[in-house]
Length: 89
Image 1 (spheres, helix red, strand yellow):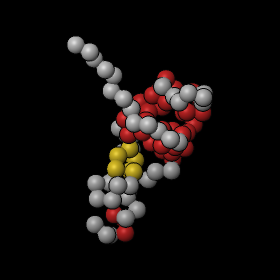
Image 2 (cartoon, one colour):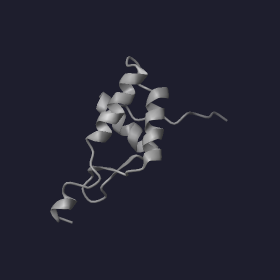
Image 3 (cartoon, rainbow, N blue to C red):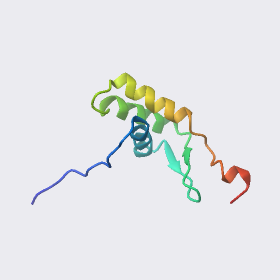
Image 4 (cartoon, helix red, strand yellow):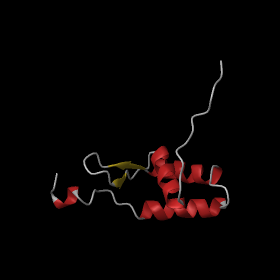
């Protein structure tokens, strides 16, 4: 029987890659209503994401650059959906 490794989605930008890492680690999730990314405020998930970035970063960037991008993206994501906070849902 042939076993294949699950393929990751094609990522076109460093930011997109960082968002994917944060989702895989459980550090962020999407608003079910609007699709905005929301911070889960889970310190263990944040550390998992940083660890993933160090170990499995994109080709052509250093581990430090990968970790910096994950942190930058995480810092740009709030814990509430901008549309939900306006009372729209």
